[in-house]
Length: 592
Image 1 (cartoon, rainbow, N blue to C red):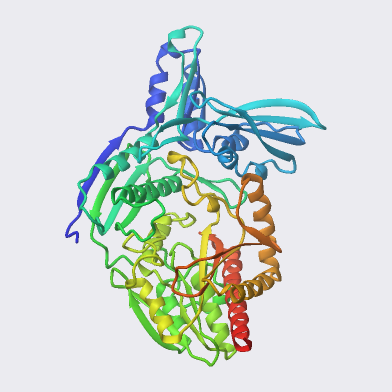
Image 2: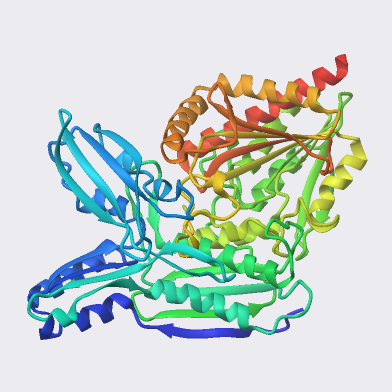
C-alpha cells in the first residue's frame, strides 16, 4: 500500500514552437522559406508564422497531427472543384489502411463535392511522406497539391520500430544554402510523452503487481481541442496524449510482468493521465498516490431527475442508487477494490432468469441509463425474473467523473478499468465481479445482457503508430453494434435472442439513421472489417468456452462521451435491446 505520494518524475520541457521562432528570427534566415510541422493549435501556429513573416522569413507552420484534415480546414482552396481525389501514401511494412484512416473525416469536409480516397504510390519513410490531393471540374484536372504527413521510424517504449507522427523542419534559403534543412523534428509533445514513459520504465517497481494504488501522470502543455463541425469530431492533442500515455503505460507494465499483450487479467494499479492545457513550459510530473476515498467529485448534475427517459447527461451515483431502490427488488451488493458498493437488485418472477448489467467500463455512459429504464419498464409490465446491476465499476466511474470535469467530451479510457487497473470481467472472482457470480448463484440465470459503449469519435495514438494497438475495430464509429457470445450447445437460443434485438433496433428510426451514416463513413476509411451487418445493425457472434453465463449479449453504443438528444437515442437503444432480449429469451425458454 502507498502511504504517501512518491514522485517518479518532475521535468520541464521548453516549448518547441517558441524555440523555433527565436531561432529563425536570426537575420541569417531573412528571405528564406521555412516550413514547420508541430503539434500546436491553429492560433499559436498562426501567431508564430506572422512573427517570422514580419522578420522577412517566408513561413508556413502546419499541424503535425492529422495534417490532411487541417489542410482541408485551413489551407486548401477547393474553389470550383466538383470532385476531389486523395491518394494516400503507402509504406512498406506498414498496414495499408494506416494513412487512409488518418485521412478521416475529410470526406465530410469536402461538402457536396465527390471525394475518392485511393492508395497512392509507395513512399520512402526516411523522407517527408505526403498525400496527393487532385481537384477536378467536370472531370478535368484543375489543380494538384501535395499535403505532407510527417512521420518517422523509431523504437517505441517496447523497442518496436514504429512509424509515428512527428514534427518536421524544411528550410530553403538561396542566400545561405548552408542553412537548408529537411528533417524530422522531435517536438515538445513527443518529448513529454517519451519523458513519461522513460520515467515509468526506469522506476524500481515491486516484483509482482499491483505496483501501486494510483499513478498520476500529469502533463502540462499547450494542448488544444478543435471542433471541426462534422461527424462529432474534435481534433484534440489533449485527448491523444491521454490515450497514448494510458495504453502505453499499461503495455509497459504488462511487458514487465512477462505477460502477453492480450492478457486481460493483469492489474498493475490505476493509471491516471492528468492532462492540463498550459501556455508555459511543458511539465511532466508523475506521482504514486494512495486511492482517494473522497474522490467522488466531478461534473455535478441534479440528484433527482424527474424523467429518466429524457436524460441528456450521464447519471450521478446517487441517482443510480435512487432509481435502483425504487424498483423495490431484493437488493444485494459487492464491494469494489476501494470499498465502494456495487449495487444490484433482483426482481423475482416465474420466468427464466436474466442478468442485466452496465458500467463495466465506466467511461461508457449510456448503459447505466438504459439499464435502469429497462428495469423500470419490465417492472411496470409485471415481468420479473431479472437481476439489475447498473453500475458495476464504481471506482472507474468516480475517475470518469473527475476527468469529465475538465474534458467532458473526451473518451477517458483511463476510467475504463477498475481501481486495480484491470477489466472486471477477466480477473479472478472477487470485488466488482462478485456481483455477477452471486447473481447467477441466486437465480440460475443463463443470459447476461451487458450494456457497453465505445468512442463516439476517432480514437488515435499518434506517438505510437497512430492506430490503437489491439483496438483496431474501434477506431472510428460504426453505429450501434451488437456482440453475441455463447458457450458450446447454446448457439440456437443465443441466435434467437440476437435476432429479436436486431428486429427491434431495425424498427427504431433514430438508430437506423445513425447506423446508416456511421457505416457509410466507416467503410470509406476502413477497408477490412470482420463483422456482419443485418438491416444496418453491425453484429459479431462467436462461440467461447469461458464466461460466467452460457449466453452473453453485449451492446456497443457510440457514447464516449455524448450528451443531449444523441445521448437520449443511445440509452433508448440500450433499453430497447434489453427489453427485446429479455422477452425473446423468456418466451423461448418457456416453450422449449
